[in-house]
Image (tube, rainbow, N blue to C red; front, top):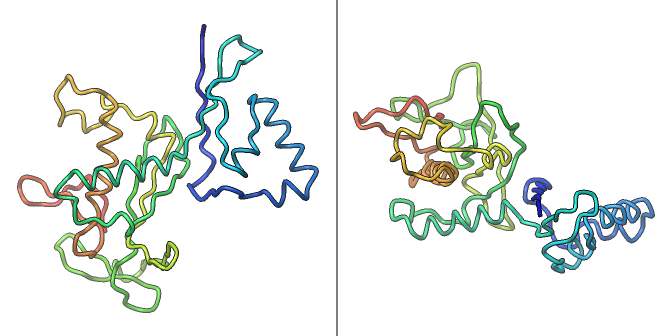
Amino acid sequence: MASKTYILCPGQGAQAVGMGKDFHEKSPLVRDIFDTANRVIGFDLSSICFNQETPDRVVPSSDEGGSVCGCMINYTERLRVLMQDIVARVEPLSFIDPASFSVFARFGRTGAEGAYATCHCLCMPPSDPGYYFWRNSNGEVTRRSEWFVSKTPEVYSGARRLDYLISFALLRLCEQRLEHTRKRVHYPESTESWIAKLDAVVHELYHIDPCKTGIRQMVRNDGKNSYRCHSP
């Protein structure tokens, strides 16, 4: 029988067990929304959100005679686990402390040009309060320009100040295929298409600078920085 898998991306990985429970208990409108959702998906969504209970993996779909996967995935958490594994396995990235960066998701339209992921530096040296230097194409730390000065906030996870934020355009990342990207020329023809997604993850980890002086550049064989990579 035919089956379909629906992927729900609820936000930027900021959800926690019990979030919204007080609204559910106090608001009839919220309870009605959850009740409607429960009827549509075929299991108790509130038990997952508030108690972290695991639903049945597959529930019948009366509309199409197929099945709907009831397994919910915290995509950003899975990306973080993958990145921790990469850091542990890949020696050139072993200097990275997984607690020094945070991972979050953004929308990213499918079928559109744009980055699959972005590394955001939060540890540049300050000039004026709230303003930051950057490392130019010559490797010198300087102001970005006379007219444009970027601001970078201090971001904390608990008591730990973060050095980098890594964001993924989830929909675009999920649809990425090796044969549809420029990076295909660097891989043998027999390489499986999903490698493009792993390549994107490793690419962003590589941008974490061991000296914490911005975004590490991609260096070409001739020793010059690649123009295809974003600046610090």
